[in-house]
Image (tube, rainbow, N blue to C red):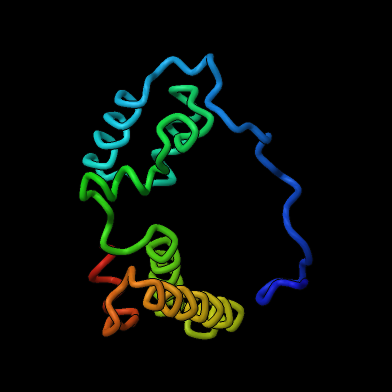
Length: 151
């Protein structure tokens, strides 16, 4: 099926190897991994950044296989979950930077279209998170709110 905002079709062929149990060469145990996750979250790292650091620096291929919980689950158990989900925050950062560019370059029609695409992605993501109960039902997106929340 074709993508909504791109001329590509299909998905990436990149897939994680199929493993069902934690490899024996992982050096950290469950409590140590959870402590690393909590420490990094307290320093302000996102869940995606925490997963990358655990994979690259601590040689943990899957936090879920090692601990039984995902990084988001560990953050939720320790009340460190961010107010805005990471994917929505990234889209809002992108919209803020596009808006700043468009304020300086008012005739940049290609980036006006990019701004429309990003804002439609934000609206769809907000609709999903409201439906799932992650965001409150009265939460509204605007570029001014995004600037206040993100910066």
